[in-house]
Structure formats: structure tokens, C-alpha cells
Image (cartoon, rainbow over all chains, first blue to last red; front, side, top):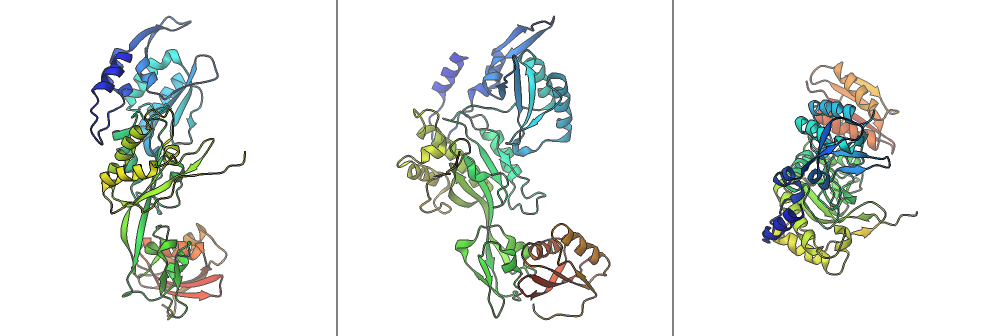
Length: 353
Length: 81
């Protein structure tokens, strides 16, 4: 394993924006590391795959020999067909319950480590992958997005799927959690993710069809739209707008329309012992631009965090000159048009303990 | 949108919030024919916001909006089959 790691690191191209896939998850490597293990107290033998263990997603419990197996559920979405098979595996190898994690994964607790082999085989058959832990790009989180949630403005589930397929498991200096929210309600807490996308719409008012009904002023909970005392027509203060599109949705005459729709990109948040609020670095990105920006962010984080130990991207950005350096990298990747001018540093959240 | 026309039905949902405000509005609209007008009295704030958004998404149209003091709104909705 060590040998494989060294070789793959050495041969990894150092080209800009090129991201080497985590070698721990490489299928070829996995195949070489399977060993047979005698299961204590039983007559059968089981295979334990150490490479799979090293990829994370198996968390040692307090109980002797027991592990919690964390399953990958990008965007918290799981087909019923897959769920049924996971239930079967959990019944066979786990306890009498599963745990739904705070980041939308499903965990099977109380798995004996001798059973890893057969459990993995069964999960593989179901098309169910194991999630990760440790200093890696984690499984993306997403809200319901725009498919069926009435407030959703962007397709967060699609973004979670893309990020899972392209970036999951990449080695970075510390854990790297992504969360995609379809609107500023931010149910998925993208503001305290290492990288968050938040759907937004910049509204535009056309006077032509407006009847001055004042519904938009009532719909706007931010005070960004006020009704003119005489005409009832909107007075818009863009600085107060949170880009929720309630005005667009509520307007009976289609006088408010979406001028720009896309993902607002936030970087550098995290929860935990010392929570940090992320900073907005770009606005109204298309799906493709968002993917490019995420790739550039991961690449920057790997390089800028090198030799600095386990450091979250939010703490790295707080170091002198780092935010400007990151913004330059982002500019190279997606151009200057949608970047936020003079972004504020990620802020530490004060929590009384 | 200040001019009010004679409504075909009136409901007072000024004590209701979501989801009852939506359900009662929808049930009242079901009793009307295409193009008929429902008038309703609802609370300002979230109820008027939600009703406006939901009615539009269901394909109907708010044709008249009147503020009744600070706390209430009187809406007229034209049913669209």
C-alpha cells in the first residue's frame, strides 16, 4: 500500500487544476490488499479489505470489535430499491436500527469487523458505496433543490451528484465538507460548510405591467421592496436583497422577473469546536462555472495548505494574504465577472461553552 | 390593482396560517367555475405572501389587493381551470 501511494503521488501531474483521484479509493489498489481472516469463534473465513478501510467510512465504536459503517448518500437521496437492500444488509450485519447522520448519511452501527468482507459484497451488489472520514472531500449535502421544493431556485441534488462523482475522496489537508442549498433559507447550512453553494435570483422589475398591487412588498421579508405610498409600485433596495425570488414568485402580473439565476459560492465555513461562518466569493454561477470553481478551490486548498498540517480551509483563509491568493486562483478559473469584490474574511462564530 | 369587482364567493381566513390558509382557499376555488372570482380576507405577513405565491403556482391570478389596516389583506382571485 505504502509503495502504491508513493508511486501514485510521484507520478501525479502537477498541472494547474488537475486533481489526482484519491489513491485509497483506486479500484486497482483495492484488489491487491484483500486478505483472508479467520473469524473468531466461527468456522467460516472472511475477507478483510484494508484499502477499503483506509478510505474511511468505518468508524470504531466503544464496543469491542464493533464498527459503525457509514454509507454514501449524496444529497441525502436514496432510491427505495437501494434502501431495501441496505436494510437487508443492516439486518444481517448490524443491530436493530440504523442511524441517520447530521450530514444525510445512513450508518449501520454494530458491524463486527470480521464481517466487513461479506457486508461490502452485499452493499456492492446493491450499488451502495461506503462514505468516508478523515482529511478528504466528503460526500456532498444538498436540500431538495428546485425539483419539488417550492422555494428551491437551483438543482442542488444534481450538483451534489456531480461533486460526488468528480471530487469525492480527494485527499486534502483536512476534512472538506460541501453543502448545496437551493435558496437563502439554507436548510442545509451551507454557511457553515467548507464550501457551500446557495441558489439565488437577482430580480428585475418591469414597470409596464405593474398595477401597484403591493404584493411584492408583502412577499419581501427583507425590506428590500417597499410599496410607494401613492402608486403602490415597488421601491427596490438591492443592498437588502437576499436573492430569494419571493417577489418574482408572488407577483401576479409577472412584472418581477429573474434577471440572473445561479449559485452563490461560499467558502471557509465549518462547525465543530470553533465554528466559522463562510464568506461569499462569487455570485450567480452557472452549474458549469460552479463545478470549475469547486475544482479550483480544492486544488488551491491542497497547494496552499501543504505542510501546514490538518488545517480547515476557513482557518487557512484567515491567514495573512491567503484570501487574496485564493481569489486570484478563483479568478484564473472562472474569470473576474462573477467574483465578489473585496470579500470579507471567514468569521469565527463566538459560542459560549 | 385597487379596483374591486363583485366577487362570486367570500371567505374569511384571517385567523388561519399555512397550510390551512392554502387548503381553505383551494376548497373555496373548487366551488367556483372558470373565470369566477373569490374574495378572501387574510393576515398580512406570511399568509398573504404564501397565498399569493401558491395561487400563482396553481395557475390562478390575484386580480385585486387591498390592505385592511396593518394586520389584514383583502385579495380577489380569479379562478383559472
